Length: 252
Image 1 (tube, one colour):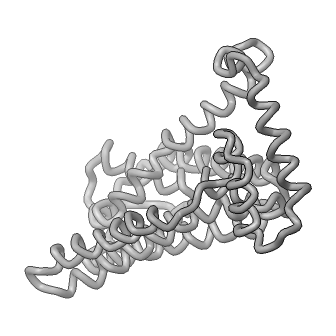
Image 2 (spheres, helix red, strand yellow):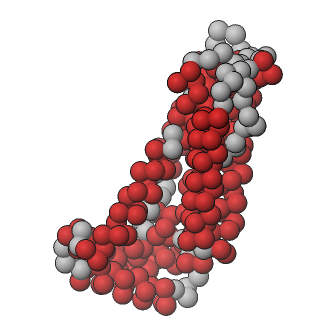
Image 3 (cartoon, one colour):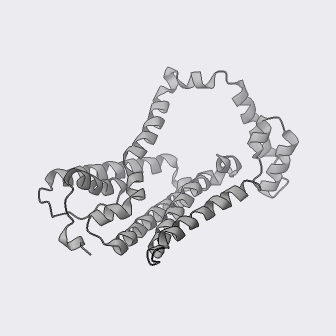
């Protein structure tokens, strides 16, 4: 929300995705730290756990230097302070047009009576249902289980300790690169187009995964891995349902 309120209009989409980009970079860095900590006997896990406290400390210290957003100040009636912060953020005194837009948007928001009740009205119900469904199915894919437990999952597929952590690093790298594509394309191609192509990819991945599960009658044979998110979910289902040993060509 902070990024949304301070970002320039023409860069708002990309700057919003920077939050997710930082998340993916953090996951990748954590995988790299775990891979390095594995080389440290006895104390490795302590080093890995201790380093995780550094980002938390940075976040805590960073909150003391953050400024209020102009939009928040306008909502609370601090007009002059909002102008000062907006000049500081934009680096120019030519903020009249943007500030007028903020004032107008704030007034429109104040004129809306019972916003949550209006949200549940029939005319707004399709947008509400679609938004909730998007968030639900994003988590329902199981991608968080894949990202959090990827070393364990790779071990169940036959990778050794080193190989499983290295594979988790590759997964984190792909995740980061995919997010970078969104950062550079969201303001050029638009949100709707990116959302549609992502839905198509997820659907095709789901169909591919289900076909693999249905047609894979040989326990020690795994088809070429699907590197999309739901394709990875296939391996989690295979392990849970079959608890089979790893294929020979994936053994350490």
